[in-house]
Image (cartoon, rainbow, N blue to C red; front, side, top):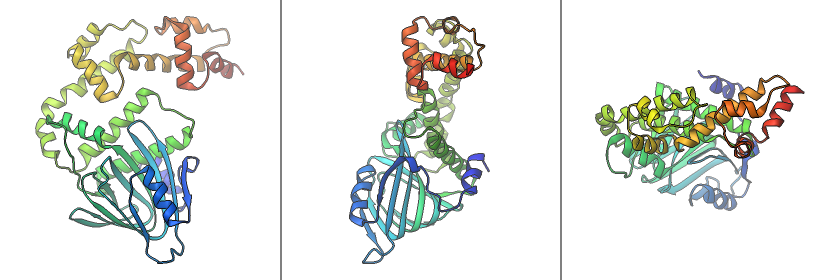
Length: 341
């Protein structure tokens, strides 16, 4: 069991998650349907009791680029009918209570530690939640479909997953561990915190890998067939990323980078955009900023910020300072002062 899952398991079952990211808190059914519908999609929401006795709704949402992590809880028993989600995929991992899921022809019960659900945007869905709270991962439909197309060698199109996730299978355990880690990270960052472009790209990679390689879907066989060719590019990109990290202090030389990775410059440029979500130069900037922050956090009092910046390959101190502030929320000198104080 991962440390993140252990930490989540150690909390009382009813503990609210992502409390600083509150979007909806209400005991009114109509208000809950309207407000949560704006965040996810329009849906019918009905309590099992005509008077909605014991009904409550809570939705907390930490949004990132291309995905979000959510905490959604309903008190009482409610039926939820979103039809087809259209714009996104939803991974729903129960924390408390239970949910009965109807997704197309599939029918199953989701419950903590046993079964989660993965809702595809083109499959009509209906649910019944019973005093249920769930950690919900939302992923942009276009992002998932484009990655599935790249992995399978086919044109982008609808991807439909088997909706039941076995949380006791290795792939289910790994997915749950990653979502637990992402939720803890969001809570640590808080609403004003930001992930660097490289960290954001890394999380997209992890989440897409869990879905497309861990859960059965309509393109699973095509991806396996195409894998011999498709895997060359990710390996090349990892080699390129390692080369950037090892040579961050040197001027960017695309010819040398292409030689180190074993593929052409244009393939590298497209690969960085597709797989990391940033350009090569943006990745290099992030590596240099991370190195500068580490050096300053460990520096002696008489260190020269300018000297360290030049050693790491920065040539324009004004742009460096602006990018550093955007990434870490403070100036390089402020980081150094904290070290000295």
